[in-house]
Image (cartoon, rainbow over all chains, first blue to last red; front, side, top):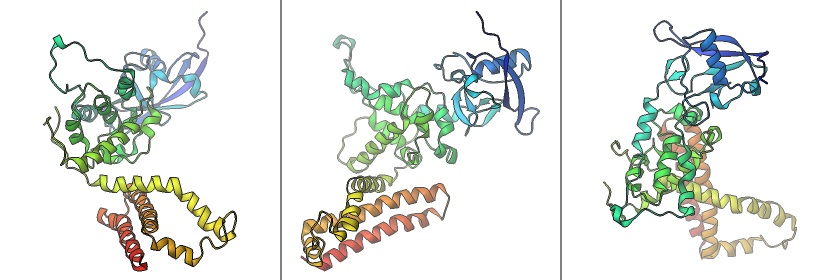
Length: 251
Length: 123
């Protein structure tokens, strides 16, 4: 039996059209909902029945693609992973992610984030060239556990919206990039540490973090970027003092 | 593409001192306050002359005692300095040089002064 949408909730959505609007403003919609409806489904109901111009990113509806991150009642959340019934009686404020320029309505510009992810060399760099004839790389469960948590990052940017230091200084490398850095750095098959340390050993790298920990609190995949930053504060500190003793084969 | 390496920060020096001070204070801070501030003066569980002038002097005249006192005082200061420095930075109080002098500067002065005084006490 299908549940009837006989309850309603008010969604206060931030609207901004760069062509016609001087600045963003809120618009309220009364949305009928059932107990299994997410905020994303609320937005989709608005787009389908009231205002087709409402703009937001979404894809998978199951907290895997990382597209629908937005501020829901001033907290960074995935719209697909947040149920309307938990926010009743409302009103629910829906705004684009903090700390990013708004492109239109709930869509933000992600260029800065993408550049930061690219800057940490987010791929495996083998220690030595290994021909296929030598067989696969084997890994023990412990070696896998060293980086597995960080591999769960879906690039949803909630941690950047939560991070007060990123809000303060947009040059700061930020939480997800550090988690992704550690995902490769902590991998026993990888030999790219020196390269990555050089990317984050400055004031705007790991040292821009003051261990607030909001990143780890808001992560929908339970990744712990603050832990990644701390590991790399230690790696960077050791590198600071031991760099003269080290032979570097990656440049 | 990896971008040009960022200028290396000197933060590791202060961060390691902060970490050392934090570890020391977590392990011994509360205990030291309890022993020197309450138990010893009240004579609870500790002999009444445990912290007498003669005993304290003997402790500071031993090189191990000097090292312990120096580490506890100076590293506690470096720990507090880092916290205050970052707080002032977040609050945009003073210039960066001003903040550094006020926090790391004080810790540096205390470190040198404590060493000087401990040496002046003699062996």
